[in-house]
Amino acid sequence: MSIEKYIQQFSHLRTDINRNRWTPATYYHAPHKPFLLLSVLDLFAQGFLQTNFISIGPELGDLFAHYWGIGIMENRRGNLALPFFHLRSSAFWHLIPQDGKEAALLATRQIDTLSQLQALILGASLDEELFQSLKVEETRNVLRTILIETYFGPVHHSALLNQGAVNIKAYLYSQHLIKKVHEQIREDPGEGDQYQAIIRDQGFRRAVVRVYDHRCALCGVRMLTTEGHSVVDAAHIIPWSVSHNDDLGNGMALCCLCHWTFDEGMVGISPKYTILLSAELRTSLNFPGIC
Ligand SMILES: [Zn+2]
Image 1 (cartoon, rainbow, N blue to C red):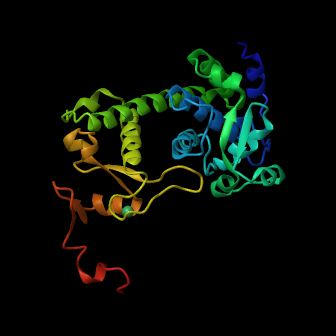
Image 2 (tube, protein in one colour):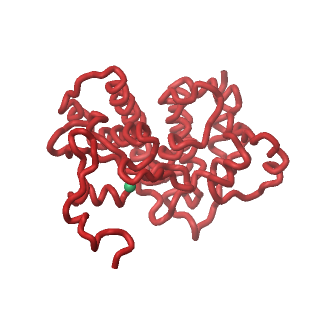
Image 3 (cartoon, rainbow, N blue to C red):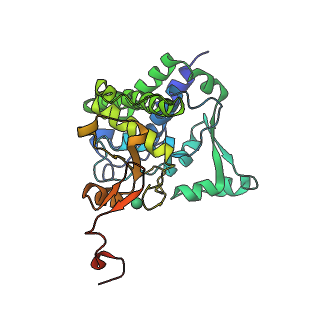
């Protein structure tokens, strides 16, 4: 099976080229499509794509956000909907319409949000030949290198390669943490010490956020952005600095506000997982709507 055709297509993505909008870091190209394809390669490496169907879920959204957040794209927000839709200009990327939306999808020229996109499509599939090829690590490595070297300046190559490696190791760590819960393996404080902090942090967050379904454990709000990634934090109930314990029983997903109140000691969690409110928070002046 030859991947020459896909090397050619990956190195000739149609991207926005604009010297005012983009920087030399990306050779003045919009980085959305390369970041999306790097994220798809990571999904393959994690064994996430067992069938030829790429959904627009938080798994993909979070990977895309990690690439976007490594420091190349200063002061700009990434929007997964844009490359997911516009990658249809590449012959290997096939959008799968929602039932009855075939004509609407064909007629659509512009997408701004993920919800607009999800109203039109179920997801995307790849050429079957490419799908089979990407199950092979060597092929993924070749195409990863093509994407990085074609669309990003040399100073960013190692950071991009490193992010791919971190994404995979963090995923494996998150799976390990979830498996420990299912198999009721006793906590082993300190085992996380063997991992790099960036892998441990990302893996712990990934596992906690998944178990809590992206919902804050205290206020119950689900926090998936319109760009498609989760913005809940993963907090340790007993801080890592004290416990060195990443077991999911010592973790909870929190929105930014609840995380702040937790860190400030205004809200706590009892050993029986009930919510404790500090006396400070219970003073009448701190109730909502009282001023
Ligand atoms: Zn909250």
